Length: 177
Image 1 (cartoon, helix red, strand yellow):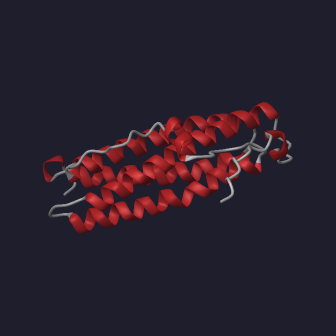
Image 2 (cartoon, one colour):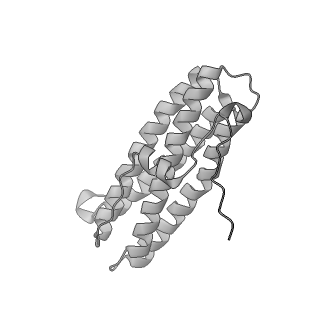
């Protein structure tokens, strides 16, 4: 049996997509997108984890909500990675790299109550929104209107997820029901 050849990394200069953006800005934006991509992978897996493990009297509603939210997060993932490449940067190369960069904490607990799941995801999405706003400032300063525009859409989606999770965690004594 032939020995497998190691995967050789291509020199990064061979991956430089032509762009009119400043090379230093490209580096900052691509790094920011890579961290965002790591966060999205972590949030996607956590949302699916809770989707698979939710239980209790509101099972159907929570199960469907978390499935919908995980699909929305998954739909963003490829666009984030491709955006980094479109401007001449590079992005994630492995799950290991993603786990090192992600700012979304894992939850490996054997059991998490449904309300605690929703509260944790609410807070994670709220933090994700703040992190995207920070990256938005960088892309706006660099006049990278395409990434800025995409971030505005993703921020809106993250705010909506936060809102839905917030409302789902309120009880009748807090008003609104």
